[in-house]
Each structure stands twice: as C-alpha cells, then as structure tokens.
Length: 315
Ligand SMILES: Nc1nc2c(ncn2[C@@H]2O[C@H](COP(=O)(O)OP(=O)(O)OP(=O)(O)O)[C@@H](O)[C@H]2O)c(=O)[nH]1
Ligand SMILES: [Mg+2]
Image (cartoon, rainbow, N blue to C red; front, side, top):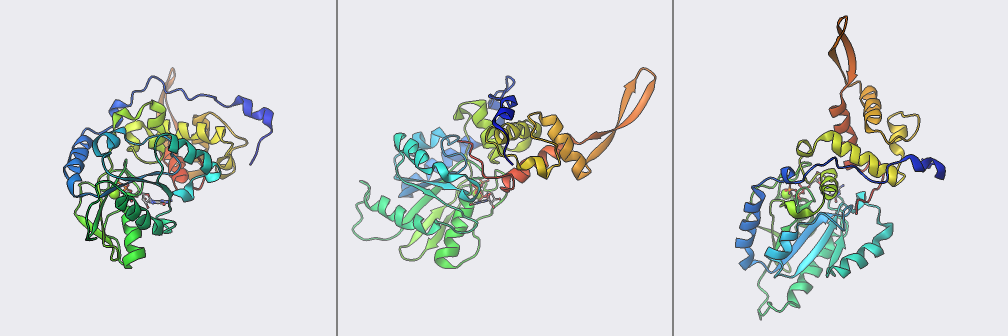
C-alpha cells in the first residue's frame, strides 16, 4: 500500500525517546560473558561476529573490538531474508570505511550463503600474521555478537551443511538463550573446523536510546525491559517513515496512522483481546471494555520479527 506524497507529511520525522536512558536495558552479567570470552581467546584463530542484517550500521558491541580485536574478523549479517538489501552496496561501502572488509550476508534458517563461511575463515586465518603453523591441524573460531542475532543458528546451519548433523546449540526467539561460553563444536571435517558458541553480549555503550530501540525491535534486549508499547511505537514510526503500510490492511485500519494507541486498539479489537476494567465516575463505578494494549503491542512486534510486515531496514 502506497500513499500520495502529500499524506506523508503528517508522520513524525523524529522519534521522541521521552528522556529514557539505556542503562537499565543492559543486564550487568554480560560483562562476565565478555571476560569469559577473553579468557578463551588464546586458542582462537578467528572471530565470526554475527549481527542482524536489518541493522548493519549500528548496535554492534564496541567492546568486542577492544577486547577481542586482535584476531582476524568476519562480520556475518544474518537474517538477510528479513532485510531490504537494495542498498547493499552503500552498506558495504559504509562498513569498509569503518575498516570492515570481510562481510557476508546469510540466512541461517534456509542455510543461504552459509557455505561461504569456511572458505572465508580459512583464507582469513591463513593470511593472518599470527598463523605460522606449518601443519594444518584444526581451526578454532569463536562466534560472537549481541543477543538473538543467530549465532547458535549459524553453528547449527554449518553442521547441517558440512556434517549433515543435527542441532548442537540451542536456539530461541528470545535474547539470552546461550548462557555460557560452550565447548568447541565441530562444524566441518575437511578442513577440521571447530566453532565456539558464546552468549550474546550487550553494552550500555551502544550509543543512543534510538539504537537501543532498534536492538530491542530485533529482539536483542528483553521486551519488558524496554516496554512493549514503546517498542511498538518505534516500530510504527519506522514503518511509516519507510512507507511500509501493510499493517493498515492487516489490522483493519482505515488508513495509515502515526498514533500507536489507535493502532494498538485496532489490533486488540481484531484479536479480541480486551479487558473489563472498573472506572470511577462522579455517579459511581462503571465497568468498561478496554483494549489490552500490551498484548496488542506484543502481537505487532512479533509479526514484524517474523518478517510479515515487510522488509525493513533499521540501519
Ligand atoms: N528469519 C530468520 N530468523 C533467524 C535466522 N537465524 C536465526 N533466526 C532466528 O533468530 C532467533 C535467535 O537465534 P539464535 O541462534 O538463538 O540466536 P543467538 O545469537 O544464538 O542468541 P543468544 O544465544 O540468545 O545470544 C531464533 O528464533 C532463530 O530461529 C535467519 O537467518 N533468518
Ligand atoms: Mg545462542
């Protein structure tokens, strides 16, 4: 659904973060995760950092570079099936300016492009200064990234492709599925490659509240920490700015709308998610039917995460 140019003027041009601070969104235990990863670095030949392809230019943990940056590095932009990659060249140029030259877009659910990981990693290791082994024994690769980007899915996909073996690492739709730095998991026979799965690590140094909201939208931060309704509002703001109006028909709205309360009301009514609440009036209590905004917000966010609201880029 597309709108006439004039109608677009009514949408917000900036998102009001309402004085929110990101500090409370980042669990303290994540610093420990990074420390554990650093301790394992000695036996690691290469790092594969997995990030969401919808968020190619922001939200990566700056501490990875500081703590682990001494190893060769491949950036895997996963969930490419959910991203709009028409601007891929611009993205690659921007990343190259930041010094990132090894980049691969993947879809770990459909094993797309995952076959390219081992040749790239092998090349990176063999051309790195540290690599002096005359005999090629085995390669050990640590998979890092913020939560819920698909690190464990990448490992499982590689095992499927190269070893025809089942899942070795638990996967889930919520952040924080992988809890500890795991033991080495074999993903290939020739060359012999082991991957080390790690828990997602976030940092309050991600920058702005808006970056935090983008990460939340991609499922990297637990919804309740940020607030479902705020994430839903940021989603609505993003969809409108990118003229992705499939939500209008899906939820039975008369037209695109920039007011999250109205949208959530429609969603709640459509789902039949209403609650009876008592309201005090001057003449006594009355019971009214009110939409469940939080259930509606959850539904809106979940639908987006499945890719059912169109391909969106958050940058
Ligand atoms: N659409 C899509 N979903 C994916 C892809 N890769 C992973 N997922 C989904 O993303 C969610 C997170 O995947 P995980 O592999 O558990 O992510 P993780 O980075 O290991 O997460 P933590 O262990 O919590 O840090 C799961 O619901 C996966 O099914 C992909 O390429 N495309
Ligand atoms: Mg995991």
